[in-house]
Image (cartoon, rainbow, N blue to C red; front, side, top):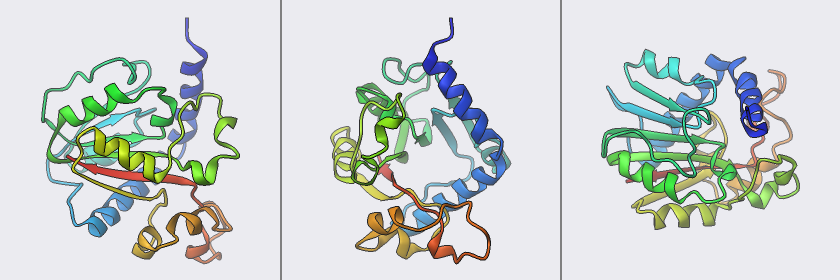
Length: 218
């Protein structure tokens, strides 16, 4: 019997897959911008990527085109709250966890496993709503169980052994200032337009984001 949660994730994955390559390219460009800001390579030649919560694997083609080894797991493959990752120790360069951790009542196993499978210098990317700016709608998604703030997300990642943790607004393809300024979360959450705004709208007004993107380096 398929669970309601499983059905929910299937529907969400289908929506993302409709715009797959556009979204995938924007994710890659954003990671390249972030690695410039933090001064640490996230995208390396011949890399291995574990996409934990991959949905319809919309990111797979973009990594395939780079010659990367892409491994994707979703709800039908394993339970990130209770299962270990079927990957060898210190064999992965990048673990992606986009809009998943807020669905885990206890992320301990997932975070421990991510740290285990990463190579030294490898990174875990976590994207999740920012409770400080999403509290009014966070529980409108009935599968959300655990909210985070930039501070709490940094602390939990540090507690699970990640030596360097950076956090940014969950913006896509924006200027370095947008990710690093003193008011970055407020400004990101209060942009007047979503990313789907017409092309004549100035870029700095588009792409409203109420989430966090954390980069945790092993």
